[in-house]
Each structure stands twice: as C-alpha cells, then as structure tokens.
Image (cartoon, rainbow, N blue to C red; front, side, top):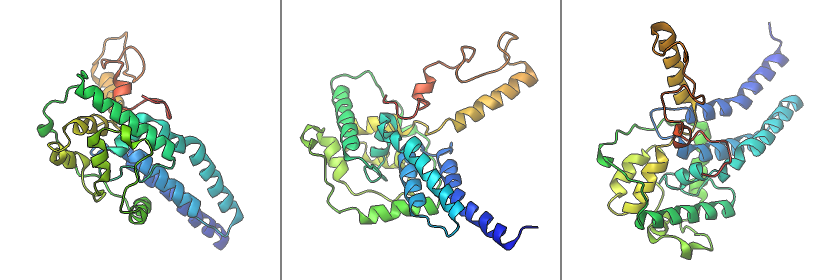
Length: 267
C-alpha cells in the first residue's frame, strides 16, 4: 500500500503527464483537422509545462526535463512549412501560436508565392469542394485554455510582418479578419469564405486536409495487415503491408501528401 508521501508523488506525476496525454489524443484524431492543431498544441503544451510548479524537487526536475525536450524536439516544428501553412490558414489560429516572427514571416511569404503560382497556372486543382464531408473538431479543456488566454491577450489590430507589402492582397485581408471560435470546423468556415478568398481557399483545402500525425494511417495499415494474415489479401511474396516498403499498394508519395515528413523539414 502506498504511503502518504508516495501517493502525493503519484498524484504530481499524473499532473505532470496529463498535458502530454491530452496533446497526443488531440493530434491523433481522424475525424477532424489535425495538421493545423500541431503548432497550437505544441505552444500550449510548452506554456502549460513552463508554468507548472511543484514542491517536490524530483517532480520539478522531471517537469524541467520534459520542458527541455519540448524545446528541443517540438518547438522546431515551426520550421515545417506544411504544418505552419495549415496553422496560418486555419481561421481559428492564424499566427497566434508562432513564437518566432521571422518564421511566421517566411511562411506568409511562402503562402503568398504559392498563391501567385496558382494565379499563373499552378497545376494544383481543387474538385468537388462543396461535397467535402467535414466533422466537428474534438475539443479538450486544459491545453486549449492557454489558446483562449493568448487569443484574449492578442491586440485587436493585427500587426503584419515588415515585408507585408510582398504579401498577396487576399492573404493580407484574411489576416486582418478576426479569428473565430476554436470549436468551429475550419473546412466549414472556408466553404463560406471561398467566394471572398477563391485563391486562398484552394490552398486552405490543400493544407488543412493534411493529417497532423501518422496514427490514423498506421491504424489502417495495422487493420490491413490483420486482414492480410487472416484472409490472404496479398500474395506470399508480400505478406504484410507497411507504410514505407515497396510492397504497399499505395503510391509512395502518400507519405508527403499525408504530412509524414521528418519534423522540421520544409516542404
């Protein structure tokens, strides 16, 4: 049976690790947009852990070690243009969770260049936009409280980067619009905004539909492996399905299309 001191330590451990469980569950969803939530979740997780305080020195040392890992492994995700573009193009977040103005400025210029490429005949085509099925996003409490606080603290007038003159007019107008409630579905919002922002809407549908993690696709792979082993779905030379090897029926480029690129790598 645990002593009073041990019980207190276990209770503190639950408090330390709970935000990581919430973050993992949030970015692992498969029925709502996840790519645009990665950077907000990382920032909220960082702030939550940074603000935590514990009496027990060992628990505090663990909390500090986890904070160091967040800084080392997760904060550099701002350099991932795919995740960063999805975040900016999500009307719920835009630039609230960018910690580096220089990084956000580079992403804005990236989006603006891509918008001009679309105007000049980019091969990317959007089809059946109005028929997209959208799901209501899952909303957690504790981590998103940080987002709610940051949104309230943000100045009413959005300050665009110094290079804003180079940005596409649609992008500048979009950034000046107020953010929407985080419980709303970004795809539904863009269906309403599509007529006012036709070029930016195409990029929004492109980036927002990327998955923020490989959990959902890994579940599909696992299910297909089970089906293959039970019913002989694949020939003997290819007994199992993997997401990286050549014996997959999927096009190899799906790893890029679904956001499964190394953390921090630009697209």
